Length: 395
Image 1: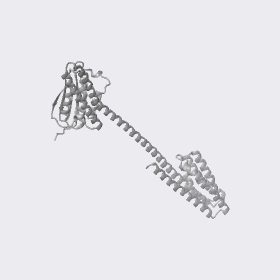
Image 2: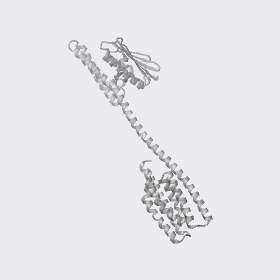
Image 3: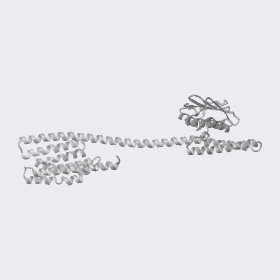
Image 4: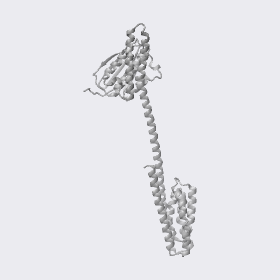
């Protein structure tokens, strides 16, 4: 329920309470005027004292009842004034006690429990005691009114305590709902922030594994062409063709990245074909073993990106003279891609920071796989990625 609807229902229920107070007050005045005793002048005085209760309730009582929570000082002042107007006519004319049905609920609605119980006791006991002392009625009548007073007091206390407990529970539930609502908004905000962070990390990996690697290859090819222009034109032309192919591949990867589709190498091609083209661009050899078949997109993308990262690292760190080999192995429930070189190698434990290997491991973990890097100074490097797959034969 929205706030507007809640405000509407509260306003409507409060109008019912106004109507209830008006009816009880009018019934009390009617009972006082119709009473057989005491005389008319006394009843007129009682009614005159009851009349100010109406503007007092309208100007002060309604505002206090609507308060959340009501101001205790103002509530005590209001009820003291109301009792000052109610008790004298209640002592003079017994029928005035009908008004207790309108005053007692206000005590529980505006005061704390202990103060409300004191006020309820005064409203129930003082009128009967004062009436009995003032008019000295028959003992039987005093006993009847006293018992009625006690029953009314017990009933009022029981209903009042029960009502306050219900109000406290409702307030507690309202606070809990507010906390849950705040928690829901906070969870939504954190989820949105986490989603944005995950998307940034995904884009960072994609850019690193595609565009950044392509630009790195272009830089290396440009350096090779500059060194070959003067003494080896055929090699320079070959590298220029590779530059053209790499630039076109980078453009295709950028378009695939923007469109959110599969990598350009896998667009309409099998994983072995994509790895074969990739290995050719890096002067590496590809060996495929096992029953080749179509696999889900996730493992194939991870295998391709892992091969891209490993080949780029091999050319960057192992040197152009190093021999690089790529192997792709299909098993019943496992896909393995491995990139090995016989370059200078390095100590994996001494490597700190860097995005490539961390991104490669993160990609493998996302699909339930593992990534392993084995290397030693002077002994080359081997990057092996193992990915669990479900067997799905090509139609």
